[in-house]
Image (cartoon, rainbow, N blue to C red; front, side, top):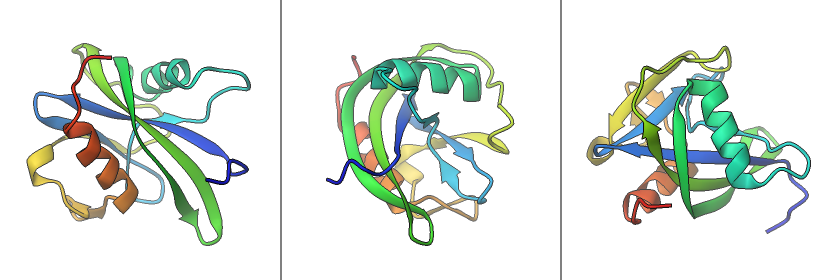
Amino acid sequence: MNLNYPTSIKGVVLHQGRVLLLLNERDEWDLPGGRPDPGEDHRAALVREVREETGLSVAVGMLVDEHLFEVLPQRFVRIVAYVCTLGTEGTIALSHEHHEARWVEIATLGERVAGRVLPAGYLGAIRQAACQPLSP
């Protein structure tokens, strides 16, 4: 895979048969995460990003997916997704980066959730993560 694209580290946060989805500014469902700082380990970046975006603490497990995502026409981002579990349960404190947070039953997931798009790459990552052991 071409590594020259910007990289975004995403967490497939699983808890009690559900996955955490965040509604972004494009009105699409997103996974929590973001760009690592220069030299920052991917797992450390993910722990930081999930805390910044949701206020939640997570344990990062194995890599479950890597793909290119066309966020805007001809603008691609390299998505690197890891399975995550909650470190401690708590109320979501949503950052300004997203409009809504929702725990969604994995068994009910499809290309649309509550009338909004769940990008195919994220859906694939969630399905991969759901098949993995949850310990980091």
